[in-house]
Length: 506
Ligand code: AHR
Image (cartoon, rainbow, N blue to C red; front, top):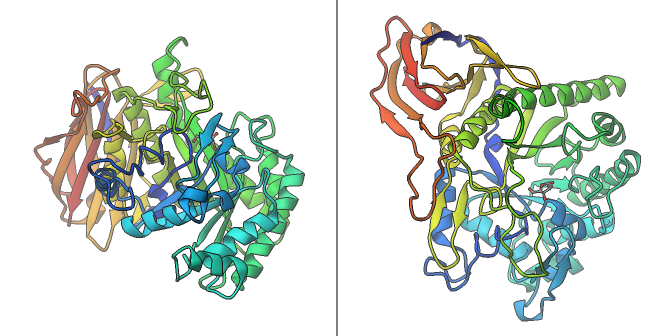
């Protein structure tokens, strides 16, 4: 039995949680769109072909914002192929995922889906084969009311009112050599600045002005890139005055063949923390160098666990191939819970985070063609965080043991404590990464008279356990008796290798 302590004080805040920290991502990749959110003819599909069973699960996840249409896909995508009469749309090669894009689903369908689900769109523009002019034309199509070629084209295509898209990503992973027409930092920085200026002019609002659109510029696509963090500095030096967010991407992988594979994998949340701290410092550096008063935040617009086991390229040029259909284990869920805690603990700088992705492709939701929709193991920590991790994150202090991994020391407990003053609610999200039960002295005295309303955990003797369509509830949360509070303290027992959620009210 390991002894540990978690302490949080209501005056020690780490920052305000932007609800967009619970955003997600849908790319034209594999079966994310086709057979994922869109499947005409499916028994649960509505008249537009949107799967209502999938929408219900997305609603459970309380996702506020979805990035679209890529990803690597966007760097070869001509958005004009995806509008107008469906029968006249052209199928095109998608070089990013060696697939065929039918273009049956495009901007108008995505906007319709967003309206239906109440989700805000976050549009990515093509900075690979695309030009600033293409980006401007998409902007005009989406956001200009009427009286110009592209705004009137949108109206002709059935959308009288502009879509009012607020969030725009200027390209995707432009530092990657796999990116269609990727660029070096200097070239991308210049192109991104020109694009940002054109979008600002079209918006007729300056950066930071009330109601102005929000622009995201590409940061390093992961921390192992040889150009990281110089890429981030150079791109920001070009664009700092015009953009609102710098993007970050990071995927973690379980490598069973490695020595101490589990320990290394459990280090992921600490690694993510380190990555965020470095990018935050880079933003600070450029802000100071430019003598700027404005803030640029982080849009962590791709994060998840991604193992190499699932197919990454389609064997043939086909439509909607089975790609990146990772099956998430209980072990993945434990690391995933830790990554969510890291994002919460850095909510002062991370204002958008997109779980990549939402359906079928490295996703918490899987679907069968013509069949059911399934919650993967990672669905649950996300659901609890997105529904209850609101308000602000507290600066928690934890005393616990550590263990070693190839990359650094890992803390046995990985936690985030949130406080929602409006709801008079305190939530504790905590992973026990230790092999022993942890007896935790949880001290929340400064919040006053707290009552525990919920104690939920995910525990499993088999770290490799996962959900399937035949056994969809093999891994899911279990409810416990709420813990007793005595003078603002509770003794909480956490099972070995478990994810836990406690909710208190005052
Ligand atoms: O999310 C899958 C892919 O990962 C995205 O297309 C790309 O941006 C990243 O490399």
